[in-house]
Amino acid sequence: MLKEIKGLHHITSMAKDAQENNDFFTRALGLRRVKKTVNFDAPDVYHLYYGDEVGTPGSVMTYFPFPHIAAGKPGTGEVGETLFAIPKGSIPFWRARFEKSGVAILGEEEVFGEKRLRIAGPDRDGFALVEVDNDHREGWLKSDIGAAEAIRGFHGATMRLKDDGATAELLGFMGYEKIDQKDDWTRFAIPGGNGADVIDLQALPSAERARQGAGSVHHIAFAVEDRAAQLEVRKALMDTGYQVTPVIDRNYFWAIYFRTPGGVLFEIATNEPGFDHDEDTAHLGEALKLPGQYEAYRAKIEEILTPIAD
Ligand code: ZN
Image (tube, rainbow, N blue to C red; front, top):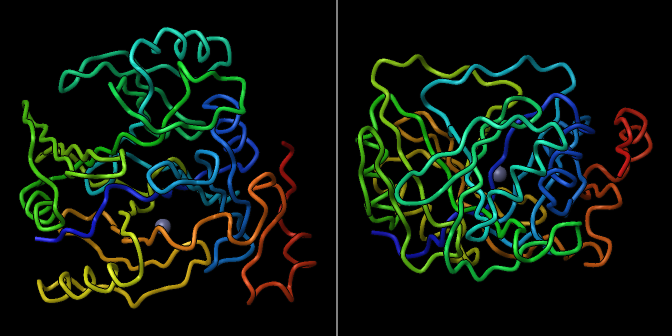
């Protein structure tokens, strides 16, 4: 069993409209945009990162806005809801805020003893704000949301699976422990994690497979401290029979990817070097940052990308 994984690092999804996406995360949810860059595999598309002050692993929601993408169709083999941790007692604040700003509220419920407010993003993306006790992470406190309500980071994520057996086994191998079960839901948590600690699996044997599009999660990334830990995880996964990509430099972290038996794409990402290594912490996310290989094409890229108003 692996001991290197420390919870979630980031979750990456797809959107239709960059401006709408930016406004939802920075205004409605009050996160900080910590990086404005491009998709390293398709530099004519933005890659937007939102999180706490410095984009601490476990707080980072990222998006590829593809202007012409069709809407995703929810189903199995994908991340269902992204769970954000909010302080105990703050759901009424969030409900009132969302009612005022027109965010779609899907309902309020209690799952595994935690109150949650379920909402939809601009592309019907599934989110829940979950009241979590004793989450000592700070969140981003320079929006108009105070410390008694601000999002702390991820609580975790849910996955919809046709058969959850093999994914449960994989999570166990990755260091997660099964901590609860109710109906078709099983909850896993990582001991000693970064706060983004839970994964809830939902078994839906008769549901249809998801079709990815706007509003779908593209992949979910788990955090390891550094490159040495990442290589150990890579070797262990490959020894177990997983096909894992080589290490890829994503400028703000190093990444490896592998497809899991339930269909969800997993990434293992390093906490190093972080989002503040190429711009001043006070101005994170303001300028368009390009990786070295695209700097020569900056004028062309800036011409293609529609500017985002802050
Ligand atoms: Zn990623």
